Image (cartoon, rainbow, N blue to C red; front, side, top):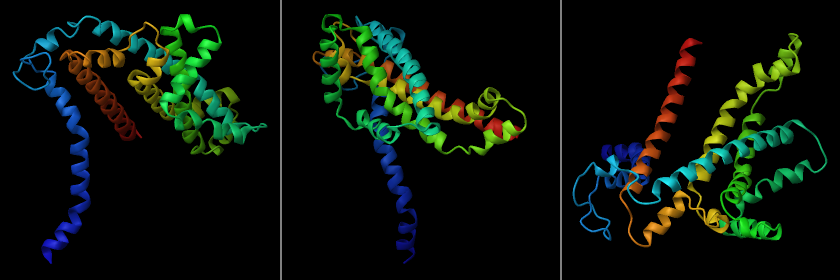
Length: 267
């Protein structure tokens, strides 16, 4: 009976730990392979430890250029999607207009549509608009802004809907102007949602392959480089980039949590 009670009390924790271990196993393999010196370029097994991959991350031709392209597109798409999505979220939550309910429904369609459908539709749009021969950096950027927009709107809108509108009213009762009430009250409350939406948009843009492949022309992003390299052999420097991106993401989350706790201690 004691054994059965102990198992029932710790079953949820054990399952959670098992799921986390399964989730992080690919990341562990990527980190491990970033220090690998394979005996054969066609093999993907750990043969010997080396630091050469980290010393020369741009060794394979085209790797760093594709990485820079992905970062540039990701940053620009994040800025564009965040600005437009935030304005759309404010309009959907704060304004009353004809077609508002329909707009709330339609905003979910890009999120629910398969990426193959999105990619093919955007390609057809560019071809119909006479941009078929100009596929490249800018068409990728437009495509990324369009499919990231829905995620930004949904994230920021959720933050706005959870905000108490009486806070703004209280600020204006204390003789604050609408602009002051927005920047001093509304924006600080909504900013975590905007930041979360921006980080999500960058991750989606940087990671996208299917939509990019339809609209890339001769431009090669990092996911497309990885896909092309996998047809021949996978350079270990790809794992270096993956490990570095994971470390940066964890560092951002860690710093955000540290700042939040510091603000709570100050209060």
